[in-house]
Length: 139
Image (tube, rainbow, N blue to C red; front, side, top):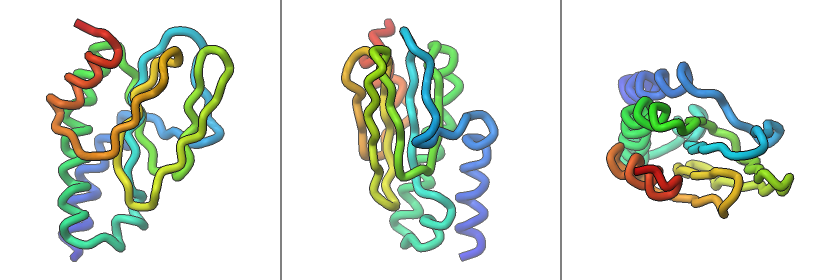
């Protein structure tokens, strides 16, 4: 049990270190921007998960950390949160609140202009990058 928590913690460290946390009170810049918001369970939530869920979360955090550098090089702001409410702003001052379910994982791709794309499953790093290029129309 202790080893499981250490592994999850070690996988989560690069994300906490290199990315800002998003919560429902934080707003984003107006105009053109590219962002991917990764959301996952809090440490308290992951403490109560079974082994299968913990394996999925480990995979999720592994692929998020592996894809983050490339996404940043593509000009995409990478954010990570464990908040239950995620505020998504559009450049026309419209705001949408996404409420995640406890223990859930996923991604929100947003450019402030088109409807954000919400993905609720684990993707590999190459799938994350491919989906981002498609959504943000990057060649």
